[in-house]
Length: 126
Image (cartoon, rainbow, N blue to C red; front, side, top):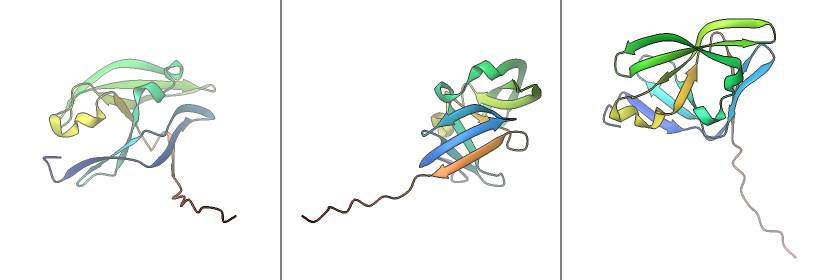
Protein backbone atom coordinates (compact mmCIF):
# COMPACT_ATOMS: atom_id res chain seq x y z
CA UNK A 1 0.00 0.00 0.00
CA UNK A 2 1.16 3.51 -0.73
CA UNK A 3 -0.37 4.88 2.48
CA UNK A 4 1.60 3.40 5.39
CA UNK A 5 -1.38 4.13 7.68
CA UNK A 6 -3.68 1.80 5.69
CA UNK A 7 -3.20 -1.87 4.94
CA UNK A 8 -5.39 -4.54 3.39
CA UNK A 9 -4.50 -8.17 3.97
CA UNK A 10 -6.19 -11.53 3.51
CA UNK A 11 -7.72 -13.01 6.66
CA UNK A 12 -6.62 -16.61 7.09
CA UNK A 13 -9.81 -18.28 8.23
CA UNK A 14 -13.58 -18.11 8.00
CA UNK A 15 -15.73 -15.03 8.56
CA UNK A 16 -19.48 -15.37 9.16
CA UNK A 17 -21.87 -12.42 9.37
CA UNK A 18 -25.17 -12.94 11.19
CA UNK A 19 -28.25 -10.80 11.74
CA UNK A 20 -30.78 -12.10 14.21
CA UNK A 21 -30.58 -15.85 13.55
CA UNK A 22 -29.87 -15.54 9.82
CA UNK A 23 -26.53 -16.09 8.10
CA UNK A 24 -26.00 -13.02 5.90
CA UNK A 25 -22.49 -13.83 4.64
CA UNK A 26 -19.91 -16.56 4.98
CA UNK A 27 -16.46 -16.66 3.39
CA UNK A 28 -12.95 -18.03 3.57
CA UNK A 29 -11.77 -15.13 1.37
CA UNK A 30 -12.27 -12.10 3.65
CA UNK A 31 -9.92 -9.15 3.60
CA UNK A 32 -8.99 -7.23 6.73
CA UNK A 33 -8.59 -3.47 6.36
CA UNK A 34 -6.47 -1.70 8.96
CA UNK A 35 -6.56 2.09 8.99
CA UNK A 36 -4.82 4.20 11.59
CA UNK A 37 -7.26 5.50 14.18
CA UNK A 38 -10.06 3.05 13.23
CA UNK A 39 -11.05 -0.45 14.25
CA UNK A 40 -10.06 -3.11 11.69
CA UNK A 41 -12.86 -3.98 9.26
CA UNK A 42 -13.61 -7.24 7.49
CA UNK A 43 -14.45 -6.93 3.79
CA UNK A 44 -16.40 -9.86 2.36
CA UNK A 45 -16.44 -10.74 -1.36
CA UNK A 46 -19.83 -9.82 -2.85
CA UNK A 47 -20.13 -13.38 -4.20
CA UNK A 48 -20.23 -14.69 -0.59
CA UNK A 49 -23.04 -12.41 0.62
CA UNK A 50 -26.65 -13.63 0.70
CA UNK A 51 -28.36 -10.66 -0.96
CA UNK A 52 -31.84 -12.14 -0.47
CA UNK A 53 -31.68 -10.57 3.03
CA UNK A 54 -30.40 -7.18 1.82
CA UNK A 55 -31.95 -4.22 0.01
CA UNK A 56 -29.90 -1.38 -1.44
CA UNK A 57 -30.99 1.84 0.27
CA UNK A 58 -30.18 4.45 -2.32
CA UNK A 59 -27.96 6.09 0.30
CA UNK A 60 -24.66 7.14 -1.24
CA UNK A 61 -21.86 9.06 0.40
CA UNK A 62 -18.50 10.27 -0.78
CA UNK A 63 -16.31 8.90 2.02
CA UNK A 64 -12.90 10.64 2.17
CA UNK A 65 -10.13 8.27 1.15
CA UNK A 66 -12.58 5.56 0.06
CA UNK A 67 -14.67 7.14 -2.70
CA UNK A 68 -18.36 6.69 -3.46
CA UNK A 69 -19.96 4.35 -0.94
CA UNK A 70 -23.34 2.58 -1.29
CA UNK A 71 -25.37 1.13 1.60
CA UNK A 72 -27.80 -1.75 2.19
CA UNK A 73 -30.51 -2.53 4.76
CA UNK A 74 -31.01 -6.00 6.20
CA UNK A 75 -34.25 -7.84 6.97
CA UNK A 76 -34.37 -11.35 8.42
CA UNK A 77 -36.32 -13.37 10.98
CA UNK A 78 -38.85 -10.55 11.47
CA UNK A 79 -36.21 -7.93 12.29
CA UNK A 80 -34.58 -5.19 10.21
CA UNK A 81 -31.84 -2.56 10.38
CA UNK A 82 -30.78 0.26 8.08
CA UNK A 83 -27.45 0.98 6.41
CA UNK A 84 -25.72 -2.07 7.92
CA UNK A 85 -23.61 -3.00 4.88
CA UNK A 86 -21.56 -0.79 2.58
CA UNK A 87 -19.36 -1.14 -0.48
CA UNK A 88 -16.95 1.21 -2.22
CA UNK A 89 -17.51 0.99 -5.98
CA UNK A 90 -14.28 2.63 -7.05
CA UNK A 91 -11.89 2.79 -4.11
CA UNK A 92 -8.59 4.64 -4.53
CA UNK A 93 -5.64 2.59 -5.85
CA UNK A 94 -4.26 1.85 -2.37
CA UNK A 95 -7.60 0.20 -1.49
CA UNK A 96 -8.14 -1.56 -4.83
CA UNK A 97 -8.29 -5.03 -3.18
CA UNK A 98 -11.61 -4.14 -1.46
CA UNK A 99 -13.36 -3.50 -4.79
CA UNK A 100 -16.18 -6.05 -5.21
CA UNK A 101 -16.22 -6.52 -1.41
CA UNK A 102 -18.53 -5.15 1.30
CA UNK A 103 -18.21 -4.46 5.02
CA UNK A 104 -20.80 -4.70 7.80
CA UNK A 105 -21.54 -2.55 10.84
CA UNK A 106 -20.20 -4.66 13.74
CA UNK A 107 -22.41 -2.82 16.24
CA UNK A 108 -25.57 -4.14 14.54
CA UNK A 109 -24.40 -7.37 12.92
CA UNK A 110 -22.66 -10.32 14.59
CA UNK A 111 -19.31 -10.92 12.90
CA UNK A 112 -17.57 -14.17 13.77
CA UNK A 113 -13.96 -14.55 12.61
CA UNK A 114 -12.42 -17.98 13.11
CA UNK A 115 -8.71 -18.12 12.24
CA UNK A 116 -7.55 -21.09 10.22
CA UNK A 117 -5.63 -23.58 12.29
CA UNK A 118 -1.97 -24.02 11.48
CA UNK A 119 -1.88 -27.68 10.66
CA UNK A 120 1.59 -29.12 10.35
CA UNK A 121 1.67 -32.28 8.29
CA UNK A 122 3.55 -35.03 10.08
CA UNK A 123 4.07 -38.15 7.97
CA UNK A 124 3.07 -41.41 9.59
CA UNK A 125 5.92 -43.83 10.19
CA UNK A 126 5.32 -47.32 8.82
